[in-house]
Image (cartoon, rainbow, N blue to C red; front, side):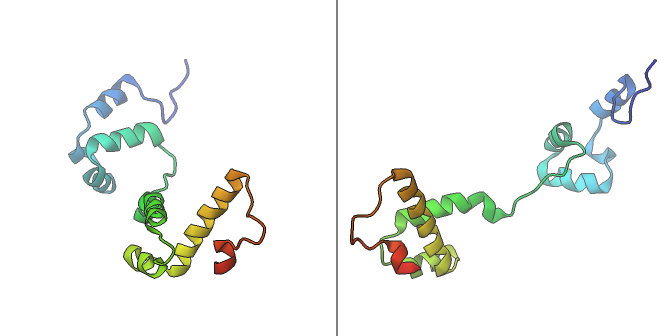
Length: 124
């Protein structure tokens, strides 16, 4: 008969796990349960047990939407205001615009008209 591995759950250990409550947890796991909730801690354990999980900075969660807002609000004259409003540098606003224009130009397949000056020429 095969001996169960460390991570295998027996009928008895499954029963203990099913009856587990927050108060039964070690302090380091109680802290996580306090933040995400006990049921969500159980979901994390069931899905990611033994793995490292990267928790992004808050900025990473809203960055894409912030960039879209900057692109929507940009009128050709308001880089300084956008930088102030969004708490980023003017260089970052320029980079957002440059990256967007580069992607747009690359995906459109169309180049500039002969003699036309691009925004990239002005900011680089």
